[in-house]
Image 1 (cartoon, rainbow, N blue to C red):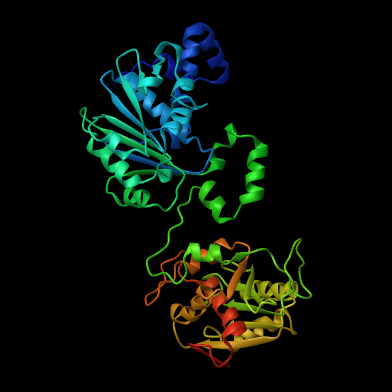
Image 2: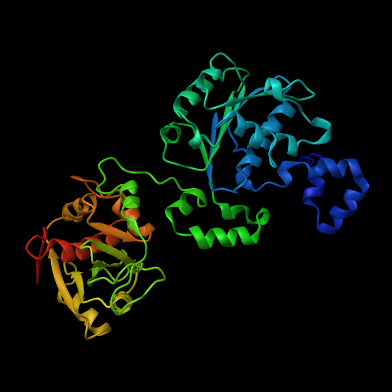
Amino acid sequence: MGREAPRSDYERVAAASPEERAMLLRLLGADAMTRLATRWQHRARPAQLPPPGAWSLWLVMAGRGFGKTRLGAEWVRAVAEADGSARIALIGASLHDARAVMVEGESGLLAIAPPWARPLWQPSRRQLRWPNGARATLFGAGEPDALRGPQHSHVWGDEIAKWPDGLAVWDNAMMGLRLGHAPRALATTTPRPVPLLRKLLEQPGVVVTRGRTADNRGALPAAFLAAMARDYGGTRLGRQELEGEMLLDLEGALWTRDLLDRCRVRRVAAEGGDMNMGAEPLLRRVVVGVDPPASATGDACGIIVAGIGPDGRGHVIDDASVERATPEVWARAVARAHHRWGADRVVAEANNGGAMVESVLRAADAGLPVRLVHASRGKVARAEPVATLYEAGRVVHAGLFPLLEDEMCGMVAGGGYAGPGRSPDRADALVWALTDLLLGRMAQPGFKLL
């Protein structure tokens, strides 16, 4: 059996118990303690460390406060300290951003540099020089042609989703990434569906790291995290800026996110139902649309509440859907939505279960005003007239409904469903409700009353 390789001081300290660690640090002395404290490998979360393998592009898409700047600065520092011949391009959305965030920021290269390997900052030359000869030069994405000509061994592009003319900047940077034996690039950003980010995600061999603001809770004030969750939790902005999601639109989708954002208004109240502070006038009529699951433990039961406002527009006011629930559970959820909003009708699809659907609903509440409908066309086909209502400005969303809107944006005209989950249950319930409210009995395509 071979002998175990000797450990470095750093590995010994990292593997020790708290008591042993304290003793080892005393024995190592102040200088070793200082060096240990600056070792990123011992402080970073796993998602902040470079991925293994021979990758050429590392793309980090994460929410604000995740630690992307620190991650990028530590990667550049490690490259520079290990290779005196390194020539690194630091590209920010602007030269000001590159200097203020990547170099001089609280998590920038100057702030994280240890005293024995601190680079010389030459603002007039837009350059950092390390004691071993490594150099990093700043560029702003507002000047793509500035990257024509310079050659680099490494590139760090920060907040690339903010770059003006991002494709041109990236292409110029990649054409100059040709020094050294293994050129590499790191791109860090809060995701937005811009052409550059779409292109990078489609490239083969790209290593993608995703993360949320909450992943860095140990380094962020609790009050900040609570405020972000309160103000932006569940919103589209929160999903993008805090959860690090990139919300894309499908080609040919019946609904786009921009369209839904244009259709958004304040909360409303239904007569006999909830009244919200600052609500618009009471809705004249309210319907609960229901898309029951095909089995007791299968897809979600879509339950969407909508009404007609004084302006004649349809108002989507609640998503009361339930996931993988028994018939008794989803029927009770329908009854709660009906009573909460003072609905005058429950429109439920009866393709799966027929009379059973009505009996389950009436078992939950014998007084429910149930209308059963039978779909003769697919979900996407019968959704198309309702999507037209949105384009005509005849439907608004009173607030944001992320799960429902994800499904809506996954329905493709003339095609099928490409959204989350197996079936657009919430979107189908929406179609039943709005068709009943706005298209009328004779104009309802793809279904008939039972």
